[in-house]
Amino acid sequence: MAPTDLKQYSLAEVSQHNKPDDLWMVIHEKVYDVTKFLHEHPGGEEVLIEYAGKEATAEFDDVGHSTDAKEQMKQFLVGELIEADRKKKTSAGLTINQRTALIAGSAVAIGAGLAMIFKASSKK
Ligand code: HEM
Image 1: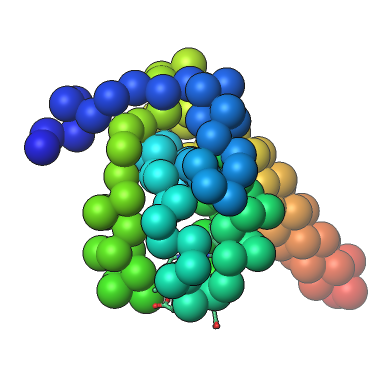
Image 2: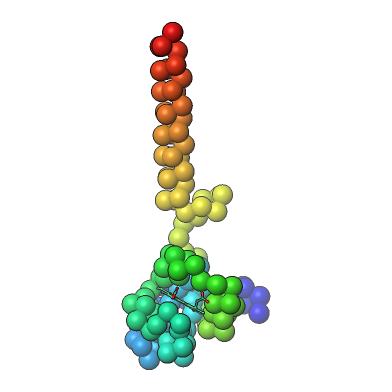
């Protein structure tokens, strides 16, 4: 199935499926129905229940799930998040927060560089 054929869901719709016997979640803009997987999840059902009906991308990535896990999740795919509910991306594919962090980090690096040059030249 091409990605564009996926059924589109809003976060509000996903949030309706927030019970252990009807459990959906959003990971990387895709919607997964993990109801049947709950008891089989090697990381336990508690963590999945915690993110029932919610966005769990950061948490999923933080665990560093294996390639096997990523293969496995495909069978639970039921759709994708509607455009409007996806995190806003900048043209470089970074989220706004990542971009802000990058700019702030660069500014600090340049500032530190200038300070070092200034220190070195004032020693003379
Ligand atoms: C469709 C979604 C998911 C699938 C298919 C999945 C699958 C797996 C698999 C196969 C493992 C065993 C280790 C590995 O192969 O990486 C695992 C471990 C784990 N998962 Fe998931 N997982 C999913 C979602 C999540 C989410 C949303 C969370 C957290 C909010 C989570 C938290 C964990 C934790 C804490 C472990 C244990 C890691 C460890 O023992 O070192 N998982 N998961």
